[in-house]
Length: 228
Image (cartoon, rainbow, N blue to C red; front, side, top):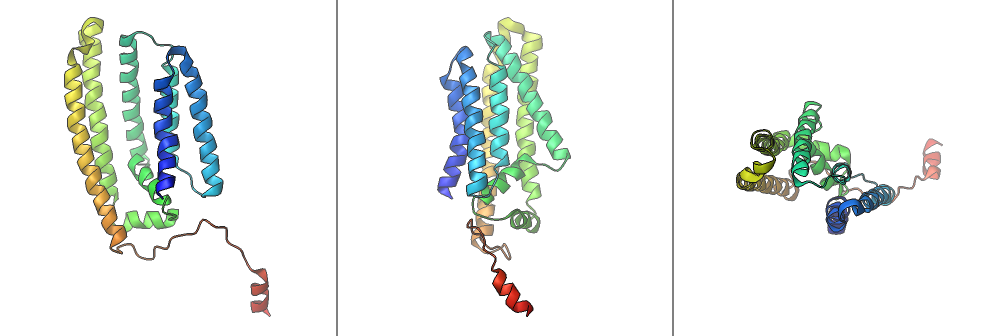
């Protein structure tokens, strides 16, 4: 599991961030190409070798790569600040829309992590329903979304009211807000992690069987004998 988790984190989360930090200005075009090649190739590989599909990882890598790619032409820090602010607003709208269609992003992350343990989709959904984890998913997601919306409001005030010359005046306030919310989010995630560990370790999940990643072989001769 640790090797699978490390591979997912490296390819879907760390690699795009490092690539766009490494390449500067218009050279970031190469970051876009390399990022897409990396996570698409890796996704195909784990689909056929491990029989799983990390949707949350692909979603993050795709969104981050597209956002950074469209940012390549921007050179003015103020314009970058505006662009980042509108991206945060769109991200908030995206999260809200997913919730409306019962496609909670934290729930998908939970599913992808448990698939590393070779649990099937049906088994994972049973853990969610039997232990009423929906409240936890929406609690964490709503806090994260509130974090984004407050940050967006502060940034919009800085852009519209303060303008280009003083837009960084509220930067310290943004840092304080982010720090407070990161602490709250960390506490919620830690509590959720302990809850899941308790469910898995103390046998509170009924009829959960770990599924082998090896292909199944059907013995047709056995069925022929049974039908005689």
